[in-house]
Image (cartoon, rainbow, N blue to C red; front, top):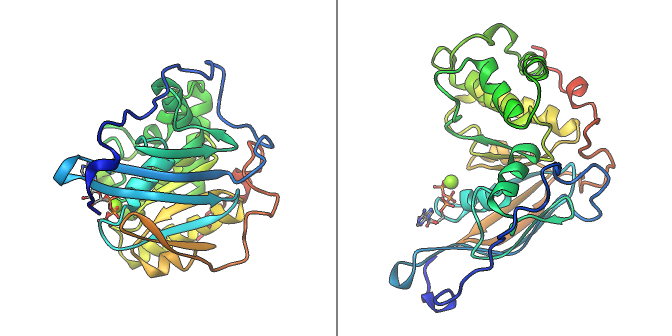
Length: 285
Ligand SMILES: Nc1ncnc2c1ncn2[C@@H]1O[C@H](COP(=O)(O)OP(=O)(O)OP(=O)(O)O)[C@@H](O)[C@H]1O
Ligand SMILES: [Mg+2]
C-alpha cells in the first residue's frame, strides 16, 4: 500500500554493525527458546520513497510456535513474499523486529545473518531455484558444505534426504532432467539438509499440477508430523487447508488469523537437532 512517505523520510534505521555472534554460533539451540520459535514485532518494510513509497509489510505482529504449520495467504501484492523474506533474514525490515528461537536476528550483521540463514532457515521457492549445472544430489549437498559439513557427511545426508523425498533414483540427474514436482522435492530436500529450525516456503506448489501438488503436500504433512515448523505462502486453498493456522494479509497487514487444527505448537516435539526428522520423514508410494 502507498502512503505519505513522511514516516520514513529522514529516518536511518538501526542496522547491526557487528558480526556477533561469533563464528561458532549456529543459531538458537534446541531447548533455548522460551517463547515462540519465530516472532515478528511491528514488522514493516517500506520500498521507495515520497510519491512512490510502498508499504509492502505494515506493522505485522506474528508469533509462530515451534511445530506449527502456518499458511500465509492474501491477494497478489499484499506483502506475502516480503514478509517471508523478512522472517527468513533475506531482507531487512524498515521497522520492527524478527526473533528466531528467542533471539533477535534482524539487527545481526551481514555475516552473522548469512550464517543464521544457512543453518537455521530452509527456503523453498515457487521457481525451485536449483543450480542448473549441479545434480540433484549436489544441489542438496551444497548448503551443508557451505555450513561446514564434511563432503562425506554432506553426501550421506543428501542421499538420505533424496531417498526420503522419493528421488533416490534421480540423485545424479540435472534439474533439467526432472519434472516440476521432482525439482520441488529436491528443493525441499535442500531446504532440510541443515536441519533448519523453520522451513519457509513461498508458493511451493505454484508451478505444479494437481498430482505434483499432492506429492508436495504429503511431504509437508510428513514434515509437520515430524515437528518441523513451517511457514508457507500460498494462493491455493487446498494447500492452506493443510496448515494448522492461516494468516491472511491485506495491504501488508494481518487481516485475519484463523486456527484450523489443534496444533498450537505446544506439542513439545518441536524442532531439535535430534528430533529424528529423518526417521519420521518417510516417503513411500
Ligand atoms: N523491490 C521492490 N521495490 C519496490 N516495491 C516492491 C519491491 N518488492 C515488492 N514490492 C511491492 O511490495 C508489495 C508486496 O509485494 P510482495 O511481493 O510481497 O507481494 P505478494 O503478496 O508476495 O504478491 P504475489 O502473490 O503476487 O507474489 C507489492 O505492492 C510490490 O509491488
Ligand atoms: Mg509473492
